Length: 270
Image (cartoon, rainbow, N blue to C red; front, top):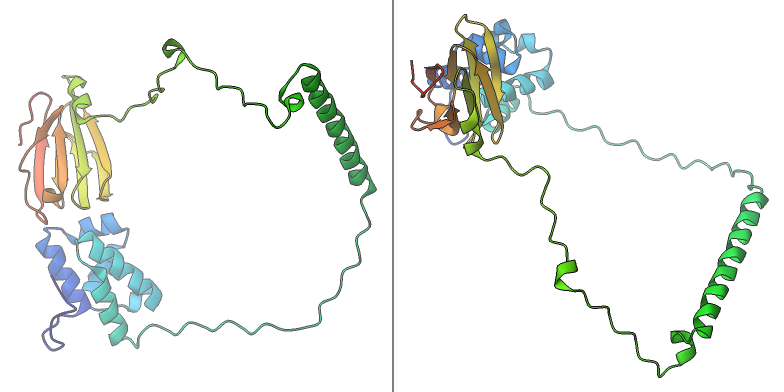
């Protein structure tokens, strides 16, 4: 849905665009409120282009951005339209000029004789050790006694048996096939937002909420229950779904809402 390219006369309002996108995504006001943490009355007011409850233009822009992302809508054209209809963004306050006051000169620091003495002792000890080390090399016919014509010592060769193979990582990357060893008496669901973000909600057989929120692109969630999991995907075509160790193909298209139910054993949609 493109708002920035439509003519001014035909372009819907900010609230109408958000409401239309929410309905097109198959989401209720309650579901959007749960995902964005924006209260239900405030969501309804924004969809009616009533921004007086937002507490200011800054908060209104933040609410518009959160609601647009929840319904897979680009928030930038909506925020630009809001700014155009509400006087634009306030100009940034220029930084105050530097006050070139005369700096008070600090008193000169006294020399730290203790630190200087310690540094001198360390230098003397280091020089003495270096002298002893080089003297020992000369007496043993080392490279210092050999002069400019001395040839460098050949590098030691290593036997193939002494070369250690590269260490393997302690924790290898887990593969999707690892879920095949899951217990058969439970239902386990792994949801990955592979091609885009998606809102997900999961409940058990008694209606208890197990998971609810927005899954950003690249994130994964694993949900387990003994009897049954009722799953709702807000952007079904963007997720990768594994149920009890097997990948479920063709869940739905991008932007569609799918309601699925799974029990232990082979994946079976309810």
